[in-house]
Each structure stands twice: as structure tokens, then as C-alpha cells.
Figure 1 (cartoon, one colour):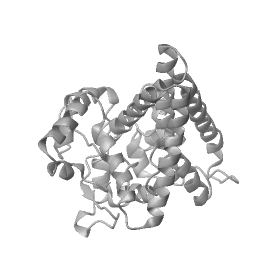
Figure 2 (tube, one colour):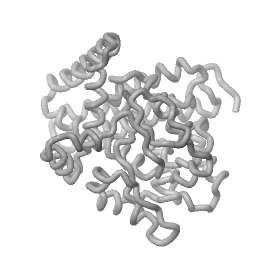
Figure 3 (tube, helix red, strand yellow):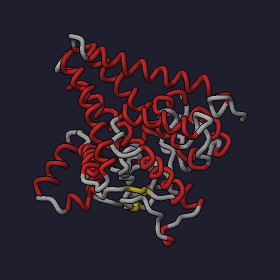
Figure 4 (tube, one colour):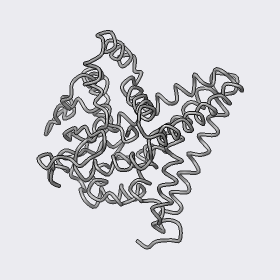
Length: 336
């Protein structure tokens, strides 16, 4: 694939512009709708904002892999914009990018904050509150992870990091201040949109790997004994596609569901992943877990997933996802 002047791949110009334009219009349109009177505009606006945030987040992923623009600097600048829009801007984009690339290089779920160890040190009521919120489908763990990222910047010894975090916080507060001036209830619907956004990302993240978890606050290299080979990577990676019979539905998450194909060739852009999946795996469904097969375990194990570090197992046949508990707190958006 040849390069264009701006975009890395010539065949990526139209899909990338179209996807970014859609997300931008959906985000701005959604913000307008949640400031209007009436439940219908509020709900539609909430869905539009939530989906725009999903697309923005997965474009961070594309930019981190350098799969959109020809120059790394352009990908990084665009990634920083997406990080601001999704609220993942408090830590540096470079750290976020490094964390995700470590996930590929070390074949691990790399986390910079072990929330389970944190909760063990808290009063009993704290874990009960987290579980109660998770029972009510409020993504308490993700909120905790994002809160830790913000707090870590202000607790850091580097004044530059504190200043940067303060600027990011002020700019985000300014956005919400404008919304509140127009319509106070818009903040409620934005919060709802953000929680929906977090749920989509955590559902996708939950069932794409059964990797070992490695905590690394400074994102240092993994110990040699934890290094895994390519066979391990493939066997512990799953493509939780929204639909195989209607592949266009996977565009809802920017084809992020074709995860085995992505791990096989990380630089391949999102718009080519369905074709790559078909080329690499064809009718082989060994590593494919349709989302419809995961909804039950997603619901049933939503509390166990919070407390139990064991991801469970994927059965070779039958109800393969029944004992697949999944992961939580492994988002690529939460890097210190």
C-alpha cells in the first residue's frame, strides 16, 4: 500500500475522513441536543455523544499504531486531540501510547494501577459501594481508574506534569461549565453518555484476551519470565465480533472486534481488518466469540469480574463463553 502526502495509506483517505467527520458531527450534534428541551432530544443526543466518544477512543488506538497519517508527529497530535475529547488527556499521550504498545510487545495486559490491591486496603464499605455501583451497571472500576490517573498527576514530583494536568482539568471544566450555562440538565445526560461510552469499551476489552496481568507504574519492561510467544498471543486473544453475518455492524466499534487480525498485524488500519480476518482465518471460528454469546456472561459475572483476577476459561465447544468471566480495569485509556 502506497503512502499519500498526509495519510499513510491511499485507501484510508475516504474511510478515515468519513469516520472522523461522522464522529465530529455526532459529538457536536449530540451536545446541542442534550441542551434542548424534551426527553427525545436528550436521549438521542446522549446516544450520539456516547457513540462519538467510542469512535474517538478507537481512533486513539489507530493513531497510537501510526495507522492513519504518514508522519508519527501527525498521528500523535491527532491522538492528543482524541484523548482530550474522551477525557483521557490528564496523563501524557506518550504514556498512553507506550502502555498500549507494551500490551502488544510483551503480550500482557499492562496496568499502571492495580485497583484490586487498592480496594483491599480500603474500609469494607468502599468495596461494598463499588460492588453496589457495578451491580447497578455504573462502571465504578473505570471511574476509579480514571480518577487515579488524574490524582497521580497532581501527586507527581514533576511540576510540568502538574501544570499540564491543571490545564487539562480547567479546559474540561470549562466545557462542562458552558453546557451548564446553557442547560444544567445537560450535565446529567453527558454523564450518562460517558458511562455508556465506558461500558462499550469495557465490554470490548473484557473478552478480547486471557493474558497475564502485569502492573508497571513506570511502564518498564516486563520481566523475562513473563515474555510470551506468538502462539500464546493468538491462543489468548479473541475476536468478539458484533456480527459475522453482518460485518458492517462492527463499524460501530471501528472494527476493533477483529482483534486476532489486529494482533497478527498491528499496523493494518481499521478499515482493512475484516478482509485481513477473512484472509487469515476464513471459516475458522476457534478464536471468534460473537458478542451475542458474551452478553449473558457479561451480565452474570459483572461482580465476580471486579473481585476475581481470574479471567475464567473459554470452552472448546458448546456454550464456549459460559465460564469466560473476562477482564476489567485494563483500558488503554488509563495510563499514568
